[in-house]
Amino acid sequence: MLEYYEKRCSEYEAIYAKPERQGCLAQLEQELCSLVAGKQVLEVACGTGFWTRRMANSAASLYASDASQQLALAARESCEGVNVQAGVVDVFSIPQREQFNCLVAGFFFSHVLVQERSSFLAGVAEALSPSSRVVLFDNRFVPGSSTPISRTTGTGDTYQNRSLVDGGSFEVLKNFPSTDQVASLLGELCSTVSTYENEYFWLVSGETLG
Image (tube, rainbow, N blue to C red; front, side, top):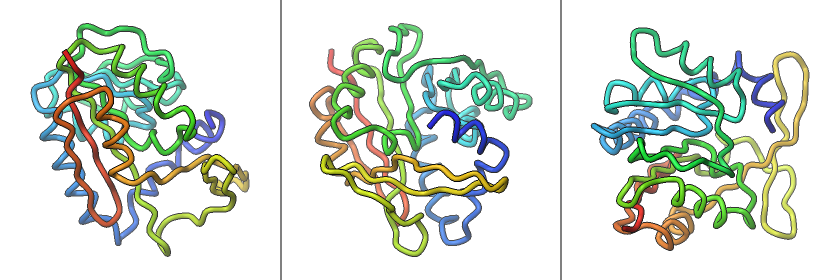
């Protein structure tokens, strides 16, 4: 997965240019920025910084992190003129970060195995102080716009075959949980869980328990 996203770095943001998704993207951005406004944000799996740039002017502070140092640096460099810090963080082993009161994971939950979802979210909750905000958002599967599912495992995990401009091909884990499924899982660790969805995207947020 990491090799795929590093090789895809230069073409990663092309996915956001799909004409049919523009209105829904704008709505998602508005929801996200309202949730991070005034917060000390730790963004995990930041990729090339598409969402980093959109949160930067709303958040009080922003630390963009990724498992890839290449991508974390790309995210920071894309935020010209905005004070954004960046570094490497393993999302399955996030160190406790008391300086942050909000964690954002965009377009990552779909890359978590079904059997690892609960442990991932438990690690997120443990890394934050009580009453911190957790924000997750991702794709919905839309036939004709989403890449077709190429394989489904016995545990319910789904995969897509993806090609790069250079001709490389990768099989990528890409699950499409329902908003209710994500809200139920987050509700085990957070209070005041809220949901938002439109045709192409969903967002779920909550406050860690005190």
